Image 1 (cartoon, one colour):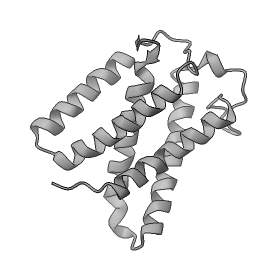
Image 2: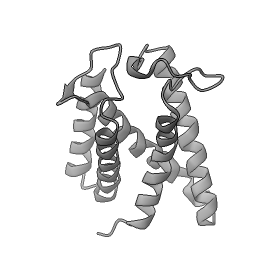
Image 3: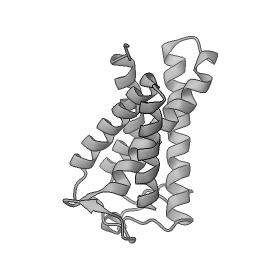
Length: 160
């Protein structure tokens, strides 16, 4: 699964570079930076029940999942952004999309793809979906990474 993510990321990056999609490339670069920072902070918090590639103890599955996930959530948001007039409405709409897709992805990967973080499996999962078995601070970060990404893109607007 991690090899597929890596190949997809390389394909996506190549498509954006060679397709001269500078704005979208910028979105991916910001998502990648946020993913990298999270990777540095969360070292030692992940030990999966499946063999994923890692470099110096850093999970490539985690890194590419967050990079690609943040990027595509933002692209999805942009499809509907014009419906909303105020910055607050847009932000709330982004939060709703991000949080729903985060919980959905966590649920699917936990229950259907059997991806479990055994390093944090002693912690309770989220109610109803029984996913995201992690300390509370990790759950807070998970729910915050999307808003951080959105705010980073809002503060540092793409300029050609």
